[in-house]
Length: 287
Image (cartoon, rainbow, N blue to C red; front, side):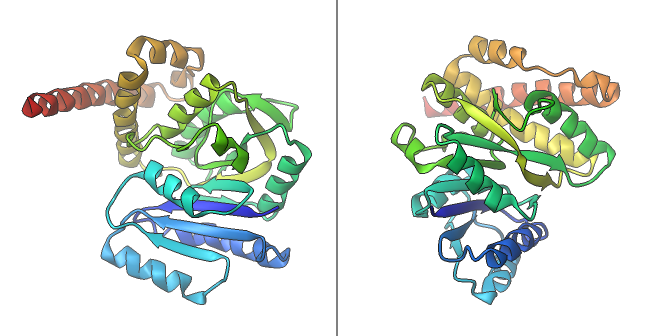
């Protein structure tokens, strides 16, 4: 069974080596080089990051491949491009701000082999740092994704930074990610999987640690970027449908930090208005 690991990256040379340094030793230790490939898709990083990337990959591991896009296309395109170049029966998607456990690859292979019915498999994200912003982000993640006293179970969400699929899924859904979305592409994929009657699972034994945003400014910037994808998803599926679906999974983050919840809620509403206004101006200019 061949495995492909796809890593989209953009201007994150400071984090990508940490992920590779957690993957490469287990690939070599377990002799997986022949049946495994790691595809890094650089989404047109700046010149400095591009030079650093090539220096990082100069060790010439046979299983490492770097693809540099000619312009910035977004994470959906980067993942789809990596997928188009991959050959694995199992395809793992990892974000460049993660670090994986030593048994990550073997556990992914094991679960897919033992459960042929599982087409889409979320891994288990854990906090890399025990600080305020990491705990805030994981307060929401834990409420949506985690179940107690279970190792493998169904979930009603997808985390694109740590999940895997069987290649046979592409017979039903292809392309996998909607390239018109700047963000929230994982939520869109979840909705399309639901439409096709495909269950999503999560294994708590496939562990990766997420290096969350570590400042208020970083958290707000991430939130604003999410709203752009949210705006286009509402336009794609209809606002009433999306609001109703999200309400079923809504987490009251005020219980963790009332002030931060109010601040992020305000930035969310303001950003949604901004993207809507920007879209209206763009449409008028086309008339």
